[in-house]
Length: 341
Image 1: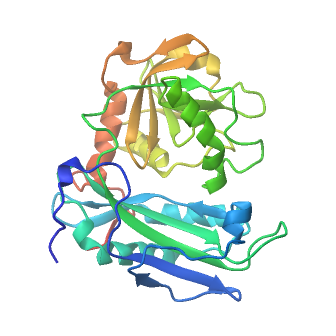
Image 2 (image 1 turned 90 degrees about the horizontal axis):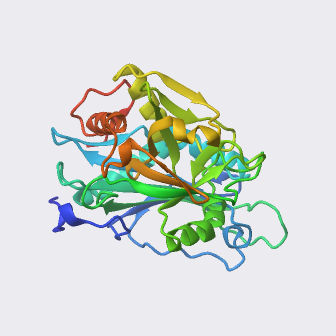
């Protein structure tokens, strides 16, 4: 099977329907065998738990074509584990880890023609997700669920190179104390939509949220964890029980320690410390690292990397090293790269 006739180097970062998707259903206390299907439409009752009480969670990971032509994916076991935690907290059945990983493999194989070639800057994005499907009118968990994985080829998150963005400190909260901030629940993202639209209207790329209890400590943005670099070259990442445990961040921390011999601190970061750092970035599956050039703290501007229009040297090295590992250019730690084809 040959590749699709796409302009791979100019793909947008958006959804494109592909040939197959994976679907499994939970009913009468167990999952069925699941299967690959062609139809991309979902048919559920108007009273489905997902529609009435937002009982849904999701994941995001990518498949890559490496330098030597293999198709691989990056640490899907961690996505399976994180989704397991999300399901438990939302009273949803867990889709078993090994089945999760195999389903990722199967859906990539079924859409091999959609996996972008090496060197074009594009990747195949995988979106596993689960939702309550049966009728629920009282406030209670669904009894039936559907687990699906869709895939879509996406271009690089940044067009024209990695350029610093401007973000703001938000007065709103992303998550409640002891709430759902540490799981990948759809409701978390719904809650942030108003604030991100408002940020864009005001000229900011993202919101930085502080801890919901005291509004003193830096947490994360609506869709990414945060990285800081100190004047003496340390990597600092905020630590909190209401931060989503980013797989990219955890990987970057290990890359910093083991590959680049950078000292790492995972700790609370007081917002008063923001002026002490020399580099700042947001990290996640889509962009790996998005450099932050400016933080607006209610009119007070804090700038990074000497206000240059480029990613800082330490974050650049971290980003290049992790991408090199994902693309097969640099040897990966054991268990990080799963070969699919």
